[in-house]
Image (cartoon, rainbow, N blue to C red; front, top):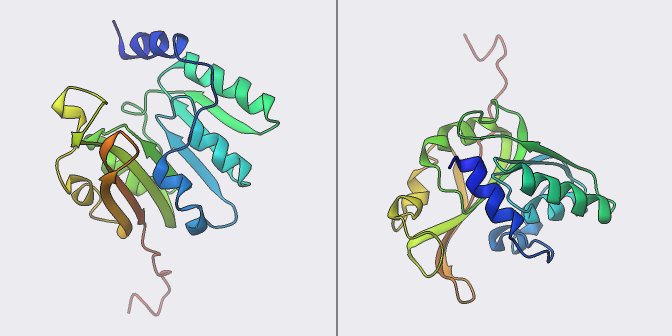
Length: 194
């Protein structure tokens, strides 16, 4: 069974209640600029996408599951929100450089994508990332999909850390939560290259 088939099956059986945004995003909305272009990468049911659209962001959601993207588009329509849903395998087609002001990743520890995620942020852009750790209760049993202690801090060396925590969230146990910013690059002028 392909990854798309696996996730389509899972989302067909998912409960129909409203999807929730990640804890790290919900608790740090005060760090968001007033608007911009956001990407909920491996969005699933799109809780982050919907929250950002409610905040006035141009919200994009990408996921390998067409079923999840269809459900998200229906929920956005029900709420009178504009979101841009795309069925996309982000492991094969990551975002292009400097294409988003904000990227949110929830429970998708694809380590090989981290450099592309860093590059996809515009200068000054923010990354909100939350995922399972080796200490988490629940979540995937495969250790490849759980981060080691402080591993998330090391996955984005080009970004400036704004916030980091590995703490208990309700009954889920520990999850790693990171907010990081791409440094603003100084403009290249004839004076700076002399």
